[in-house]
Amino acid sequence: ALGLALAGCSAPELPERSGPAGTERVERVIDGDTVELSASGRARLIGVDTPEVYGGVECFGREASAFAERRLEGRRVRVRVGVDDRDRYGRLLVYLYVGDRMFNEELVRTGYASPLTVPPNVEHAETFVRLAAEARERRLGLWRRCGAPAPR
Image (cartoon, rainbow, N blue to C red; front, side, top):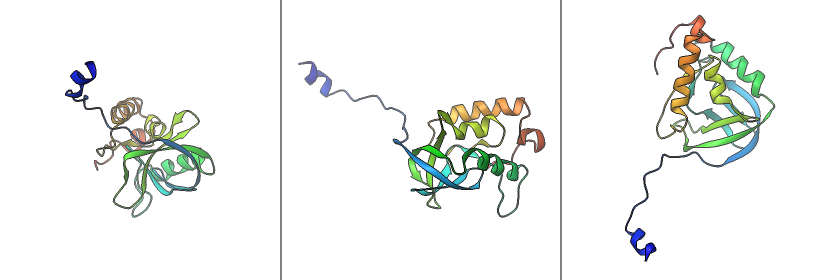
């Protein structure tokens, strides 16, 4: 009887979650927020935006890319694919984990990236915004050298 009573009820709408995680090797870092993965190919980090190094070098772009190279290149990382799994350039949209730490968060926490929220990949958006505010307040990375990044 309880099953029949519940059959008419709809489940509450839950926020979208990213997909399951797999492990891959970072073959190379293309720039601060884009990498080449061993099995999946080119991947773009979700929720973060580092200054550009191609098509006109932006303030702190080289530093962000060098940081990503030091932390990622040649390492095995855990990869979680976003709800929306590809961007308009065909890159896989991912959260990367080095050990138990999300690298996307680390970029923002240390001032190498600013938040970039693109629905439906919003699972960690509030965290990225909070970490950016803390990095800006502490004048870390691009917040010290470049001021506020241009909005995208």
